[in-house]
Image 1 (tube, helix red, strand yellow):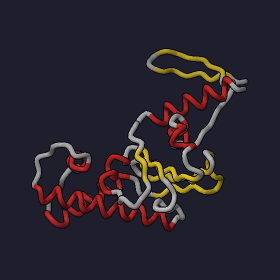
Image 2 (spheres, rainbow, N blue to C red):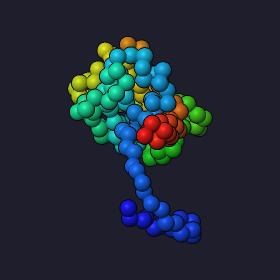
Image 3 (cartoon, rainbow, N blue to C red):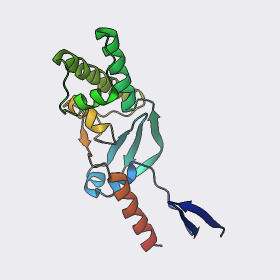
Image 4 (cartoon, one colour):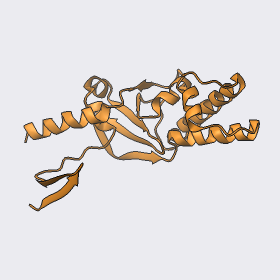
Length: 189
């Protein structure tokens, strides 16, 4: 065992790493919500981040080896496309923050026509995302899906009723899941 030395906030540390426990991100989030994990024989987990959408198949509560993808379609892609469309159609250079405010349903003083444009573009993005998932053999209309991550609140209003998507809004879900799984691993040897 080799000690690891580092400094954090002007305090020097020396630690020994005894064990490392790894879990797929996203999977840990649903681990702390076992009712979500165990209620279906198969599920799709979709973690919508800033730059990627990470997807994995889960069968009988366990990730399926080789059945995962990372699509470069994170929520920043949506926002960039919206900003470009506003520039093209209206000649305006809005900010990411303004667009995010509208997408999250918060107050923002801008023309209703621009707000409609933002919502229409977000709907197009969401439809395209689900088409890409289908191409990658993740059919959210056939397999119940758990959507989570920073971008989930943005696409939530644009998800079709025919799609079987449960939204996990807790932004601390991954951390809570890691803690539960790590304690279980430690306590069970």
